[in-house]
Image (cartoon, rainbow, N blue to C red; front, side):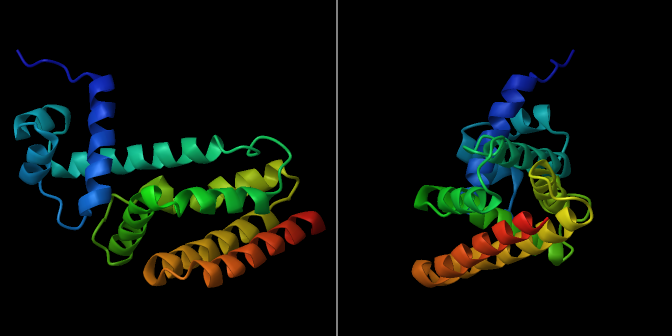
Length: 192
């Protein structure tokens, strides 16, 4: 009789898989090299995930969960800090050298989703991003539908700035634009 997969062990395995993908990328994911890198057999992976599709889906859900938990844990998220301040804290954390691989992985996922290569696997990390930030805006008193509009614009600008920085490495120029974005968001929130 087959043993039931341990949910705690599965979570640990997913975190290791995310770390692997941050280092190696998602587009060339294959079960055998992944298992070798983790020091496991492919049987261990198939014990927890029926196939590569299930592994991919679970990994993206776990990445989304980790990202949202981290954002909610930011100082000021549940307090009175301005949205612009939270955006800047998010930027400072995501663009630290040791966190850039995860940022690159998220942008790789976005690119693969745009190319139609992740059909059925686009995580909430991408599809519900605007709603996630709109919730923060609503907590700060921004009514609907303005919260959704501001969130959509802010997320799009932030993503573009982060891709610009990761591509060019021009921190000073890009962060000057980010600071302007943060100020604009705070102006929009204050106007509501």
